[in-house]
Length: 312
Length: 278
Image (tube, rainbow over all chains, first blue to last red; front, side):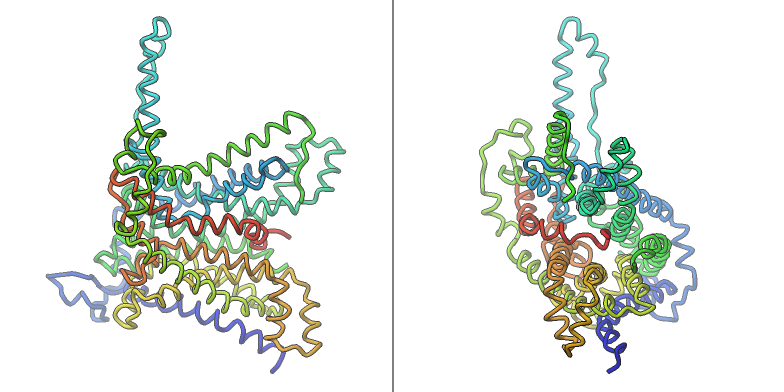
């Protein structure tokens, strides 16, 4: 056996498995996206089974493009993924720098900090939307009620009362409402994934060249300029990796969106596909193809960014 | 370890305090979930019992009859374990080949593998249901869940392993070759012991991802192979109802993986670089 054949054989199972995993469903989706295919129809029972005789060409694509939620779902996908990325990278950097030093209880702080990363998305969403963010029964509702009561009490004071009378009564925010449900999703996912960013940045900070920093200190460079000129360039690659891995996971967010508001206001592309798929498989498949295209556009940027330095 | 040593007294005091505050804020939601799980459903929504209440275990003792917790938990353990093992079984040889015998296409193959993870699951859900239910008859089986969990994690597994293996000096593997060690021997006796930390860390992360997976496991199962994600998603109460028992079952759903994570966090931290550290 030549030197080259064996490695190829070793990676073949993985390649073949992933190829099947990608190609079979994808080609079926592609096929369904070009035919009329619905799950239930009393008027046109012939559309309820996939067949080439129900060919619709690009009709499903046109239908999806005109659907009122389509642009909204793309916007939401981008808004949710983008916000989560910005929040987790900035918070992750700050926290990684904060705990990258020796202090009492460092081990426990680290354990507490990374715990959210282990929480399953379904529990995460149930916990945040009910126990924490609920406007009446959650901690948010209770806190707002408590503050209002406190201010009410202060209004009875002789002089200061006039001042507190000017304060408005606070209204709790309903995070199931259509304007705010996307923020609830962003909040809970950012909470869960910030620890991931912290972990990666922390490992990377520990590999930073200390002698460079000491030299900079001797030259009189301020801690801030050291951070900007030495640490941030050192972290460029970890940041790229955090961005890439998270994009992969968050582009397909579903459980959180389902649990928070069943897609009202925070519907992203996967959720829209799910809605179509309740009956109209043709439209769901066409949306799926759009989602594949969007994912590929993003993938090209991200993979280029990371791939460049992968092989050195 | 490149931890910074503080020079000023203020820094000595302020940094740890800030770190502790941030850590407690991040941990608070989990604490609150566990805390609520010891309240009765009625107490859990009353502000006067916010902090002072009579703790009860009834949510946990009733968990089996309310939610059939153990069946779902068993399914989670079985599917996550076998999916992780299977992914390593396929991933280790592949990453070995890519790291030590790279070809012109290795980078492209790796990137392509990662890109399969970007395929929106929702786009292919219907064909998958159709295939597994109507054509293959494996819908709602452990086999299907294990296979799917393995496949969705395989790209990450191979990538993580690849980044570890690349750190191992090629000469060590070459030396084995000179001594006439077989490829299998190379992997078993040289590579695996050397890269043990990386493999363990990959296995851990894969196990966590499998346990927490909430799209495929929920939609490709109904009863027989349903995991804890299905249990939680299916039983989330309407607003304000059953906070106590919902907290208890949620706590029970995340406890195994959170505790595993705590015990193995050193291992995980050491290995979780994805090649970010040069």
